[in-house]
Image (cartoon, one colour):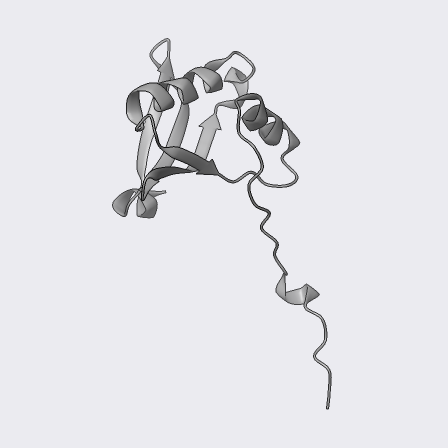
Length: 108
């Protein structure tokens, strides 16, 4: 994270009852925002803190007209449900091929 903060990323830490409970790591991309990481302490989840943190970002930190993008891992179903409940929609699908799974090269 230190490397990201030394480049173009910014972080905000959210507190509840004077304790850190969440953070957001993001960067400005043209006229939009790319949310790289958004984390709510596991013991603090399902209390509306993530929703409140995002609302604060949208209303007080980021430009109102900014398009916000983020990625969620395919296996993170609860993360996908969280973001969709807040109004985010699927935009793209990123695929990968791991080195050990590459198809064999044909011999000529």
